[in-house]
Image 1: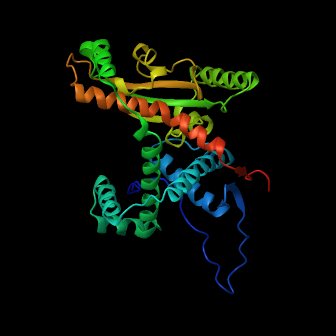
Image 2 (image 1 turned 180 degrees about the vertical axis):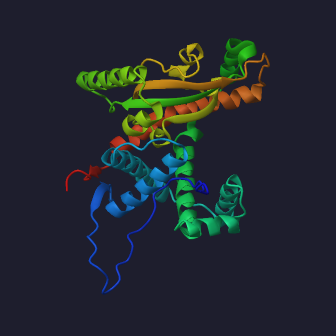
Length: 319
């Protein structure tokens, strides 16, 4: 069986039109209200189907249907808030940028754009639908760039300190994954205790042999939950500050005990590591690494802030 092509996940699909004299189709319903916008059940169903396909292609077992629906809807709500911010800020994606990104996606799948379009058609999608998905993702990146990355600075003193502390092992990289048990902004002591207890319970499940990726999909509150918690490869300098003292001491495949941050409690898994061959990185590389680490530190907190300031009515379990 041919592998399915990879496309970015994004908010997709309008409600399909009903044809006259067709069979009776159940009415669609609202599953979430996000400020002045609504997310429909049909949109959620389409997104869940996409996520299932992505999980299957990565050999990750999908959690129960209801659990997956909650995880996917939570991500859709955050995306909707970010898209509203893009609209309010009059951000846009021009055709040149969009076309270049589409060609890049096709090339990453080993195809020309025409071949990519043909494959999508065979899988029941159109190039126009995927273009809209990608356009929305690019808008979200612009919002994150404007609201988070553009406000991050790196000083010469920070670069000097980093190079001094890293010494000859500054080019080490780690492949990480995480499960985040989030706490709300300004949590009560009871909310913190509940989150910590849940994190400890998940840690014990992992120690007893639970599958990390499946547990991340079903339980993590992080933005990478639907990827099995995978954070990808990160240079040592880009590791979030709260992880910096823990990750180097983990062995391959080991999971940390819960790590407290303003966002909640993190269970971090070291999938693999590389580098550490004694070569020292340049000042420019150090600056880029520190910049990205600071962006990573800020992004989760910023996401919590925009969620807290938005009006969200999650109706998934109300009907």
